[in-house]
Image (cartoon, rainbow, N blue to C red; front, side):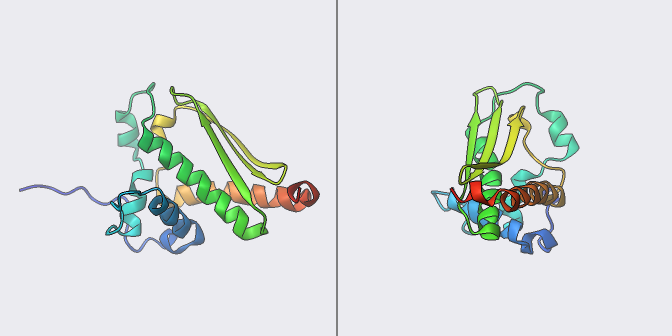
Length: 158
């Protein structure tokens, strides 16, 4: 008898119905060149973003990120950039620069304005404790970015 792992995201999780949840699914489907997510639910698509404490403990402290983890990082910040665009009507451009050792920086610009500047480290351990925590993190970045665009609309419009 085989045991199946308990899903980390409930199919009816309210975050899946939010603009952020829908954008994350859209971004994940966009990078799926082979259609592997075509038959998956939104919860199944976003499940790799969730890392329990036990799963994080199993990962080495130092490690090189693989292409799948890097793609997930780009999806997360692309989704935030897309939501910034929806909110302010100006194009938001994400830039993710990582070394092979898992250190780097993420910038999101709107016009000539940098609305998000975040250092990254240990990206091989990229993940969130829950879907709600991932949304909270994104909401925090989104609100700061929208506020910056509002305060510096002349620079954002360049």
